[in-house]
Image (cartoon, rainbow over the protein chains, first blue to last red):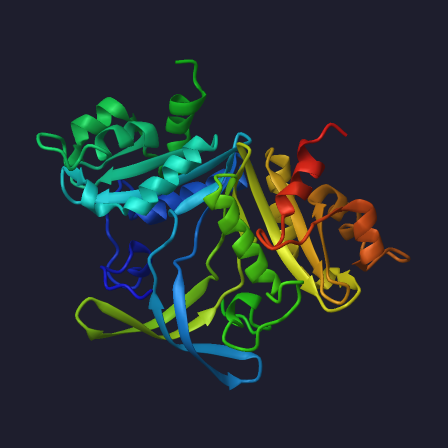
Length: 195
Length: 195
């Protein structure tokens, strides 16, 4: 299926760098560098999945050298990141907003469902939201997320998650030099502490 | 990094269909259909990762419609498949051989390392090998795989895993109509039975 949406963050690398976080790197890079740090320290094995691309036509300018000459971005069937941490399966979708509230229309319903199934199957599933305007990042467990998401179409129910709400239902991620976003500390608090 | 290897299985879809398994579908399709079956039955959530592609040039023939006009296949940094099963992280590399023995040179060293780390972190990591000639499929736990793999460069040590060896150190996967490859039954025997 070809899609016409805005091109995912991952493909904007050649355009301007979004200077969001304290250290002048964008959100996706911050997550990737943090995951690299976690891998190097044997803390967790978490990777960003490649952006799915529908290849239509391939040329072979040289023997055994394939050049793709027509292809289209596809809708990801799952989420951005997954891997293993403390023996458990971990899976999350990363979202950034320029607003002070994250609107539910900016996440695919099938991604929310995917994270819900992850949770049902005993894995760790959450959404990590970066509020660019205030330079704060939160993880929100999919169960908490769903409490708001599933009622979003009802009258008088929230259509978005504000920073204040994220603070109430989520766990803030601390920023640093390395890792730039130490989100596994928030994961520890959310999933591994005796609440 | 651009690479010049043989194009991965995933990209051969438009060429001839390899009729390997009893039901006339190729190995990768059989795995994908099996994973779809497992997802639909809420047994496991396992996906094939998209083939990583390095996008070099994108055209915009229409507003908000991106057409990739130059791109190259990249070496996958990890393995083919991962997900969650029985609460655990599961990760594997799928390999097919036309031979009666699977040669170690056909798997990337970094993929073997990746699976080894998965195992060290408490996840399930294995290689699933389809021996096309004899139409038999085995899963081999990464620890067993490593016992042979790590000595492969020594004199008088095995350079490949024959069907007989796979039978000795692995678990055979039964073929059927749906799922075409019920490999999670082999996973149950290998990882969840009281041996």
